Image (tube, rainbow, N blue to C red; front, side):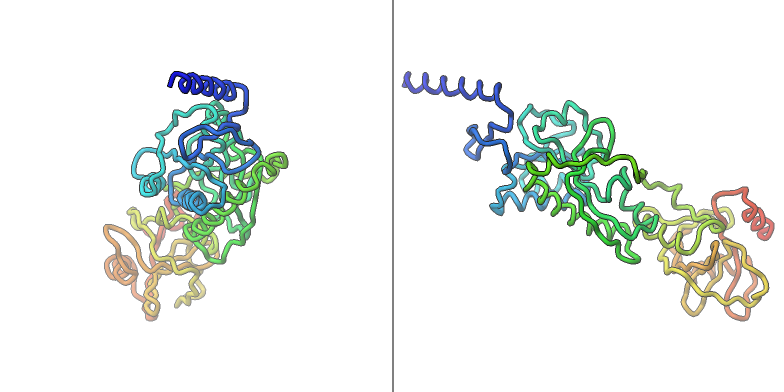
Length: 374
């Protein structure tokens, strides 16, 4: 027994020496809990995944499936997420993946590669350096276009016809500026919403991540820096973006705004000083007014009985909504009966004129409308 203990002690000293002298990736922990000496040239990888939302869950799902499918890409998989019941944490717990709090307390060489998908926290250089192969990021745009936290929303908002997914290596101090390892284009479908596009890019990004991990050792020497040409920032969406400026925005711009943000924040305008949320957008409307000689003022609103739609005049035409939210949700007919017909006279064509006023004041068009209201 003494001899066995002595041999075991000698073996531990050797392993400790190897850990100190060799790259961390040379020592891998196998399923039996013992360290094993392996080549550090490629997969399977020990991964630490950083993520929060449903977009990130798609990549985590594919990594989890890869680990159990025998593809020999993922050796172990653990998760870092934020506090609260975020989708990534729920998925990790349901699939018995170890979960670390943010910021994680990990050792040098404990993992080979980090993966960040829709995490939202800047990773410090000290943490990045703990991963011998760096930390990869799945970003839903063709970087350097649309760096920042909301690339999908801005892709739809600005009418991009082509987007894609990019795998980069994380750099400290700034988001989305690291070198590109892999990139795939995607045609933006006509009339898609940000949610619809995001779902497609989440799946595409997960598959591109698996492909990148499979060939990571070959890709790293070929990585290319982004450069600043074509770099555009994609800031978070917020309530201020939801206010429609009827005199400045075209039908197409309002359509893109609705498809980009209405799944999170409804479009807004004001009616008689009260905020109105515009719901169930139906697109461009073709309106025939009784007085064709009088050009309608942007913000003019009419009720279209045939289609049960509120049509609002903007910079170059009319756009329609099926419902609004004032004190409660109202159909177009409810709004007409309860509010619109009280301020204007009914025309023979069953339409009524009124005004939605942009939140922004002070423009000539705004002042004209104020005079008409008074």
